[in-house]
Amino acid sequence: MEQLKNNQFAVAIAAIIFIYIILYMFVVSPIYTDGQRGIEILKRKLSKDKRHLDKYTNPRAIIPSEDLIKFHTKRKDELVAAQKKIYDIFINKSKSLKKSFKEVEERQKQNGSVSLSYFQLVYEKEVSNIVKKYANGNSNLQIGESKEDDFFDGASSKEKQVREILRFDDSRSIVSTTTQAEAQKKFWIIQNILDILEDSKVKSLKQLLVRKNDKANYPGFEEYNVEMTVNVDFKNMPTIVQKILQTEEMLTEILFVNMTRNESYTPDDIKVFVKIGQTEQQAQEEALKKRGISSIPVSVRIGCKILNYIQPQK
Image (cartoon, rainbow, N blue to C red; front, side, top):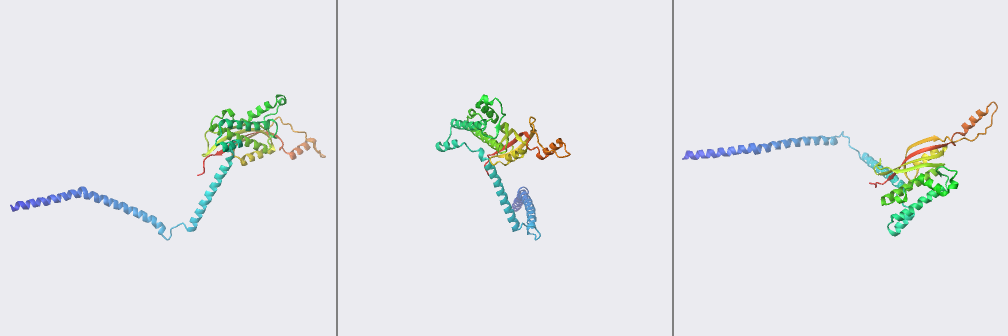
């Protein structure tokens, strides 16, 4: 009996030991292994962090000084200010394309809104004022070619010619707020171009085309391509380019300039003093060199881009 009890005790001890072995193999050992792996990862990370920290705790490490930090902070402020100035240029030079006619603004202040029919009336009146100005010859800039039969055809024929060249949008095509805005912007572009040509002493405008690009090349901008053909004295060529690029009314970019001499031009006779021992032809050539070719009329085709800034400043 005593021996049986001892055997049972031994079996129980053996079972407990077996259970501990199973627990160690399947529970404790994996946890220990994972723990050891985690410890190794932490050791490597701490070692890496220590090396990174040593770069700054080392007496020989290059640490940005307070003066250097102040310099970069000041430089950042300067760049932000310069960026704001550029945005201000974009905004100010695009204002002229965003304004409305004076009568439209006054009506909007009174009623809070403006109907399309009212805008059409004002728009047609403003277009007619410009057309009549050039058709009646009230400007040094001539629109189109002068014709001998203009006198007999009357003012209506000349006005028609001016309209065909300037190509304002037809007031009847203004049927929505979108077409209204586009017609308004195109009107200001044409008016600004005419002002530039007058200031540049251009003799005549033969062709003008303003069209909006469906896809702008510069994000945040609307783009309008302008092509024109003008007659001008050669000496005034630099003035045209300068006036286009430096106008305060629009953001502009020159795309191309093509120039051809007016073949129908015949220079006036040059009266010269013929020196002793000099032929008349030599005297004329000498006088022509002194006079230069600045007064020779040329036909110029100019392409430029008008940029309208529409993206708000961030």
